[in-house]
Image (cartoon, rainbow over all chains, first blue to last red; front, top):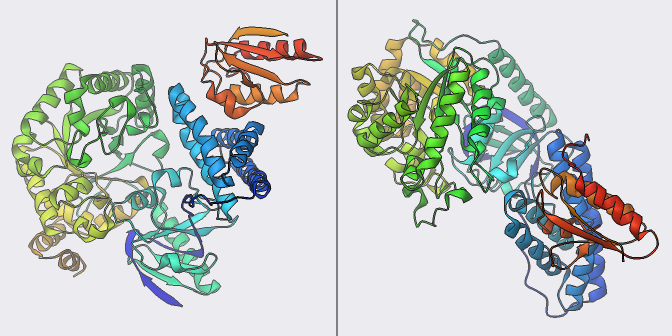
Length: 543
Length: 91
């Protein structure tokens, strides 16, 4: 047995055989001479192998939409014109991988030129190309592996496209060599309730099929464990899940001080278990992968679906959080040298005000039609003037409770003034870390700067919470840090009124709060604020 | 040579499910059928990639052509299929 160390990104233990996510194949340099008949044979063999693999996946796909996409890919792979055109290219002196790439590039251009739905399917063509090229080169199929038994997924890092449709029943845990605690991998793992360790150097040297166990709290990864150990780890995990499933009720400290435990969701589908309300309804899902913005009617329908699921409960809707870092084709934003510092969030309304006004109109109509208590907030606010202007827009649309997210240090430093014309604040600790420490969230090498336990971050949260207490207005946290059962104690002690997180994280936070009085939380917060390092702040809680 | 020009009737255009149904039907015909939009180059109707690449939307005029025994019936069958709203057909 060998022990590796990473950063715990999603708590819990898991064990099983590891299988790696294969990266898309790199196209090798074109050979100087080729044997046309061998290359033609290679194309045919690749088509057969890929079509068979995709057909098997389509048959096993859990929903019909996924199955239809896969079957359409099978029809593209088996297309006779693909083989004919590849043959022509091979006769022109190229090899099978280049022939396939070139032929599909022609269709890719046609798809893009057609726009609309077809342009959105370009990724299916790219996936097909990667699969065919990998088959020609004898490389593993790119994407999430399908070993046919529960496993631990290992990868350099995971991108959203890799993980769409990841099945938590099969993927017991995640270990990545790169990425940080606020990376996509970490967020996905917490959302799905899958234990995960990130930045685990050496994990890619472990052979597929090796039995490995991971601890998503401590970041310890043990390779080459026995089958008995693996069974024990998974049994303990199941017992923990069952115990937490029985916890219920609103969030409160041991002495009854309420701290609302809310859910972060992207659509009604994400609502699982018991929640007091929604503290962050991300609306980006509606806008992603499309070349035109969603219509008023489409938005009303999507918002109503969420509001209808939460009658009488609070739902905080965040207006579109997009920009050059999360590009949406219809915004037509020019490339920016520093997208995270450019036109994103509320700033998009400077250029394209209709996106925000259409959205506020749709939220208002949906809110009027359902019984949820609808609040609205906007991301990337830097000044009190921006906050006031947003509140005015909301009132014009008949939305009475408007708030802002605190992600920019400038807004945190002036939290009292920012709060003057809005009803509440919600602190996005991931972005607030990134901007406070000048450390890109996607840069795993700077992970320790992005640690929410950094005293400077805790200091900014404390001043926002104090401004809320003084104004008598709620200040919540909706970043990843709210899901840390220990950090939740610090936040409660600072005067934060609500914690919003992936629904699966709520039971552990509920347990933690219930085990401490408000006064204990205040002592813990004071010690964390006084600490010089994240390690010292953590130690202050454990003491 | 039997030729039919029809307007695509499917709500989503000649993509996704309608394209898959059309291509599968074309493959069943005894003769090769071509499809084109406007004056563009005709492409084989049994090619999923080529049919998708037409980018035909609901209301786009497309022309089907075939030659040989059974060409008229093949063109008619496919033209009738295209004119229907295939998104509304139950799976």
